[in-house]
Image (tube, rainbow, N blue to C red; front, top):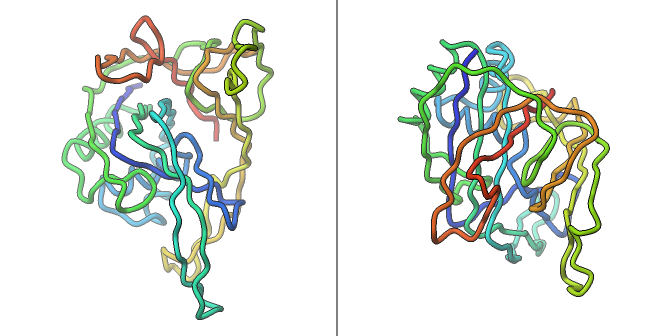
Length: 251
């Protein structure tokens, strides 16, 4: 089996939490369905076709990364049921950098590698205007390993996490410590009458997003340790050793 590692970075990103209405909070990382959409943009297919191909190829994915900061932006939204415009706030991530892995059979990974190097459509990080720079690392043959220490990533389910007291700075009231977020997110959509823009989520999974402090989980998860380069002007530090543990999402 083969592994493909791509890096996505940009000026802004926003991955709306689907359950929120007036305040559009952003997930810290692209969700599983967002990654399927990114794959679809690269190969030039709509979401419905991309979702079917993803399942047919039996692709496994994982993601890790962070942003330098975040801020709120005010939007006016036109609704179909009301001619007036609603005002909503949307959380925007500033200067994000993400590492996404694809794992599968060699011919499928080579296919992904080809299209991420020369994508059909621009790759974006949530909204169409959140354009991404893409760095594609050469695909390699590699088997997953057992991971127990995680940081700035997301895993499937609700694992037991061990947190050390030293990870909290009790003198700093703004320190959130090893923040984890739990969301139930869609992993599959049904499309109305074959029209790819009218869709409804019909399958959900729990996902645990792990913050920027290393934590240990009770049970090992399958994934990969990916080598990364921490740029001198990039204050986001994942691991001092220059590697990043990225678990595969179990869907």
